[in-house]
Image (spheres, rainbow, N blue to C red):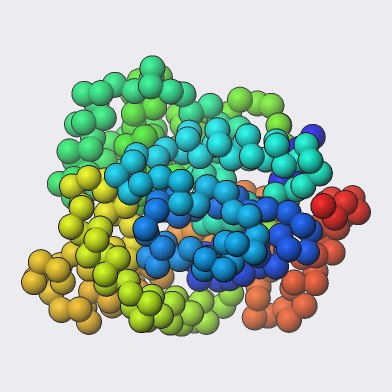
Length: 308
């Protein structure tokens, strides 16, 4: 049985820092579980590790696509599974680090995500038109009526997740939430980091301020200038909120407030998703000063004494 360790939790809680520390300790490698870090040249808004950190520990599924490339959960699942298998074969248990819940779910539950054969081009275009016209509520209502199970399980504020769930149900008659191959191909240990909400929200606010200092506006302007072709990247938190500023419709101050607000809402949704959908060992980084030592002890138990 292959083994995988995953570090999950809300944005800005410290997943990347912990992943780096543990990957070094166990002489292993990191697989990014973030849906936006795959894109080249989008570094600040996606909160990638620094170039030095990327060199210190080998990272997979970072900077593998140009921003105009469409990247699906199925693409992630196929590549991540191969990396996990290859690393296990040479005695390394990889660390999957990231906050995209459905990405991790596709690995843990071995979801059968189908291929092009289950995708109707006209249907996808119809659904995409609704998303492009900010008719998210229409998509949400459609999914709730057709597939209430998926409506409860996926991130319904993410138009791509909505489109995919509706598409799967209408083309296969099955809920995407039930598409499980049934075979446990790997054993996962899920480490969840959390914090008291006020402290987490303050850290999110500080992260946004730091991103601005690092050049977020230039990066967001790059996305804005290519928004017609950057179909997925243009919807990322940290970019889309700045579009009104570039269009001269709102102040920079208001747009940054919107980034912070949306980031806080996203963090809340992430925690809810991981808490409700997955078997996670949670560690409150403020309440428990020895949380890292406890995590390492539990990793040792999971590995059975194996240290890479």
